[in-house]
Image (tube, rainbow, N blue to C red; front, top):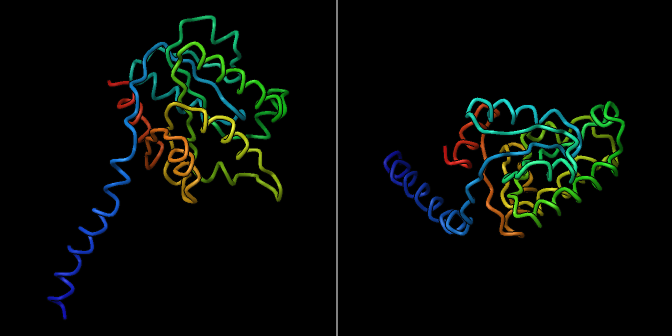
Length: 198
């Protein structure tokens, strides 16, 4: 019985690996991001600040403006726009903006970036905690933030525990968008390093 189990375990592992192989092969390659970079938010969560910490460590030239507009994007020849999703009612309150304001601003920003050939990176880096944080019944603000950015992005940066329900995997497959996943916040540095070819 034990010998049978010992033989079966590696076989099961191989079968599982082969089953996932076509999915991995079907994943489009992520484009190489270039500098300078503009980091912005859609929803005023603290997530963008985490991104800037790792960009600094990697010596990547960036500017951070949480409420970046089309005018800000045009102020410099930005090659990459990173928009971090995640709605914070507290953050939006402090900034004096509504979710509708955020979605309108973000839509115009993405449209301008795409017209100008700027790479759009959609990021959700705070995991499932951000998607569920403070969400009351009927509160879809975080999901609206995701919908405003991720399907229109050229590449996605996603913390894996935020994709427990397959939300981002579904978007990536449907829109044929490369998705770079990472396990925990500290791993974001490695993902950014890969994205920028550092």
